[in-house]
Image 1: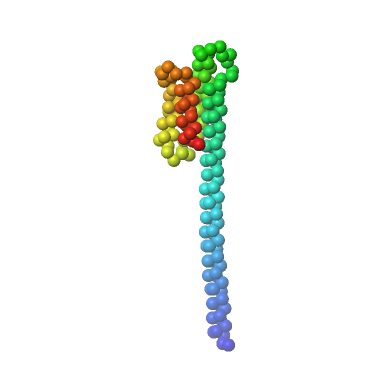
Image 2: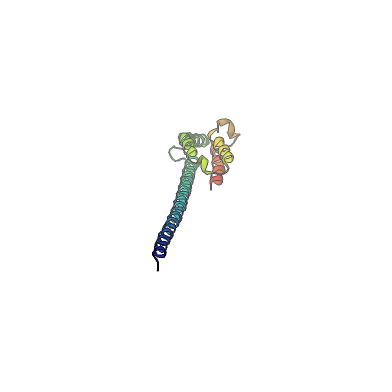
Length: 148
C-alpha cells in the first residue's frame, strides 16, 4: 500500500467521522428542541386547566353563598334578598380579578366576556320581579356551563 492510499484512507476516515459527529449533533439538538417545546406546551396546557378548575371552584362556591346565605339571620323574603345580594356584592371584586386571570384561556373570548360582563353589571333593575338570587345564580350558571 502506498503512502498516498494510507493518507487518503486516514483523511476519508477523519472526514467521515466528522460528518457523522456533525449529523449526530444536529439531530440530537433538534430532538432536544422538540422535547423542550412539547414539555413547555404540556406545562402551559396543565396550567391553563388548573386555572380553569380554580375559576370553576370559585364560581361554584360563590353561587352557593349567594343561593344559600348562612351568615345572615333570615327572617323573610326581604332578608333573604338582602343576604343574597350582599353575598353577591361581597365577592364581585374577587370575581372580576379571577375572571381576568382566565379570560385568555377560552377560545370563545367574546362569549366569555359577554357572560362575565353580564354578572359584573347586574343591578336591582335586573331582578324583574324575581328574587335577586335567582337572577344572579342564572347568570353565574351560564358562565359555569360555558367554563365546564
